[in-house]
Length: 251
Image (cartoon, rainbow, N blue to C red; front, side, top):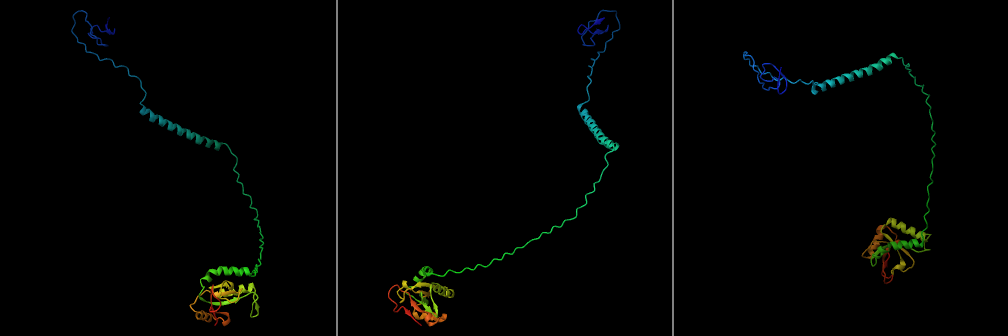
């Protein structure tokens, strides 16, 4: 038996090359035979390993199998309780009738209306005093001072205790007389005769119309137009110097 010196593979008697590794083999002398050139044999193909199917094929297949399994599980879960419930008798359904409505109760509320009558409050005005008259003079003082040296209509002159047309004047009557005149002539102001030298009497509360004129006649004409009686209205000129002479003129 002849073996390959390299891989020790058995060689055919007439092999010139190792059929496994291709090593040349020296020929032994033999009886002459017809020369035959052997055809080189290809190397045997290595055994192919047994591989599983490609991942691209396995993944869809596995996913399909999972879907089928889930569907089967769902069918079992759905069908099993259905058949179980159908097979096992359950409690009969009882329809509860709603209770009859109680008769409506009517509640009557009595509203008591209390009417409160408020009696009107009557305020009795406080009678005017000398202080009230003095306060009025003080309030009108600035206006009166603008008339000094000018002719104005004097429309009233009252003093405590004076009797006119059967009326005895006190402080309330003097104040009421002034307020009546002021309501008719809003420009009216009150002065005290003690503050000016043109008045002959003292302690008089004098009402004048705060409208100045250039002459006594013009002031008296104003009295005529307003409809005053002769003894109730005449021209007067307020002064801080001199006396009554030349500073008054009756109608």
